[in-house]
Length: 297
Image (cartoon, rainbow, N blue to C red):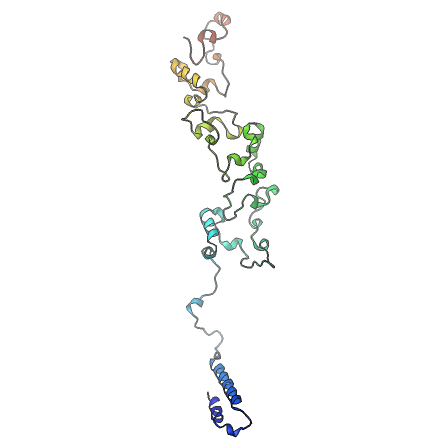
């Protein structure tokens, strides 16, 4: 302010400088006043390394963003990863090394989006190198939607199933995979979605006990299958057997029918039931004893 006082003094006596108008003097005074303020507000010199008092919000240096912080602007993707992300529940920046630099006319999405190959090799071989064809939502990689677009690659991941379907031809062979495995990948349908059960009591477990889904007409069953399960298709035989009150009734069906539609010979259990002469005269056991499910004693 010591520079301004003399000027104020002279400004009150313009007669001393008649060639300078009042406006010129006023502008000069304000210019000098501004220079004085700048000089007062200039930062004072500090010794190197001296501590500087900072506001609390700037007290710490910048730290990498956390997934939770990313989620504040991207809540949808954060929730997908949180609830169904599988092994992709990692720090966002492990994949997104570049972000917030998209420019429609300069930087394309394909140049900044993470590449699956950064972490994964060709998991399913070169025929399925385009990961997004199946894993359409990378934030939930195992939640694969089921539709016809997947058909070209099912056999690569499921070669045994593909072989069964083509070897044991049924009406199932003519269907697309997603006709049964709809909704999403790994969805296993109930047989009753398309088929009527043999009995009202049958469950899904009963169906697959005999009918492997991908070769449904190749009926198989365990050795200890309950006769009641066989009754679903063979009700008459089951009724005859349970009402016969013979030793056969105590046996499981698989004892005489080790494979579907196979029948063992009586001699496998009864090697010499009668004298040889009688067996020569009556070689067919059933001529005297009737049907094995309902023996005539």
